[in-house]
Image (cartoon, rainbow, N blue to C red; front, side):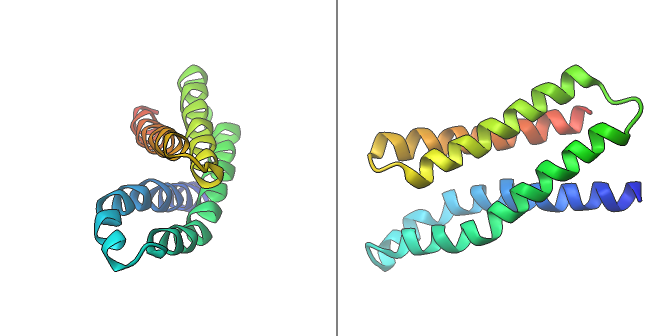
Length: 122
């Protein structure tokens, strides 16, 4: 069960974090397709990314509950970074100004990558 829990967690985190990195790399090309293309691609990504975020959150809490030698302080930092990533993504989705889109996207991506790094330290 430990391997399954960890597999689900890493898979979900890979979708959330990796998807953001891939999207950042292909948005310039997507913009060339048409003015509405980035929004359509982002909406399609969200249908996969948000469920993955939820699975990562649930399996992360599951890890906290069952892993006996877990560094609670480090886990707290990781959990905070995960929440920053989710909040940033939410701001990016609902934001209407370029500043809101930029800040939300940056917080989401930086929080996601940082949480993955801290997760490796656990």
